[in-house]
Length: 355
Image (cartoon, rainbow, N blue to C red):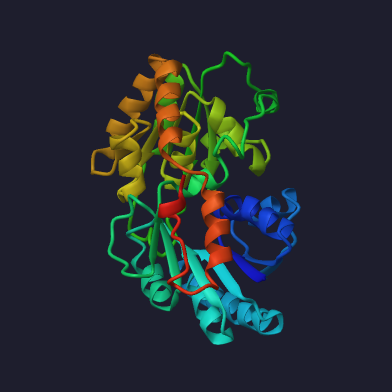
């Protein structure tokens, strides 16, 4: 089987990395194409994944449209030469469009209900759309649900074990109290007009006053006052840091979910709500969502409370329950890609075979 994997965000590298290795080990030819975005190139290189960058970064909705058009045109040119059997992506407008044009099947994974533009451009052309069971939306007969979250494709304990040496590299001692903070750029098509913290500088000061060291990962340039807080470890070590952190607080849903799955309580500060983030709060108590106008002040109160009342056993117990309920999502990816070429009547859905 010839498989094209498309990458347009750092989280996509993590999501597909183990599936790429397994597909290749099974004798399939896997071709990875990417768009420059934050540390995408660095991650692909650090995981030794052969790839080609097809387009650069964008800094606005207008430039995103131009970059995306370039990416799709170049992907089409590559696909015509490769003649893939299946093309896969997260979200995946380019993947689904190109698949139709070259006669390939397309498998899309998605978990973001409010990404209206991406869904409008991708879903009508996709053959299979895989979502977590908690996804809120009617997709129709193309939908395959699975009991998990994107982040379990790479943070399931069968796939990941945190490396304690990351603490020394970050300048931390094992007993230090520290928080990972994520700041977003708000330039994705589904983030325009949204917001998170009112004042990141004031947020850091509150957390430091509570006794925590604050390490920041950011999609945007930091104010001079926060440069000393910028994370200095390599991009592929972010999950090691999250696993040992006392708390995560930030505007990025993916990083918040990653922290939760690693057993680190996550405070999500974003005017947008998501089905999987709500489930991680309601079912497991590992995420605390703050989406309303008072999100800045209320989220900081919650984060300070977590820092001041360290309760590792509670978070560990909640994580254990989550892992008992959910599957290794890399198994979902590989199964769907390897079965998409069979007839619908012969396909076994992931949900039915999740155990």
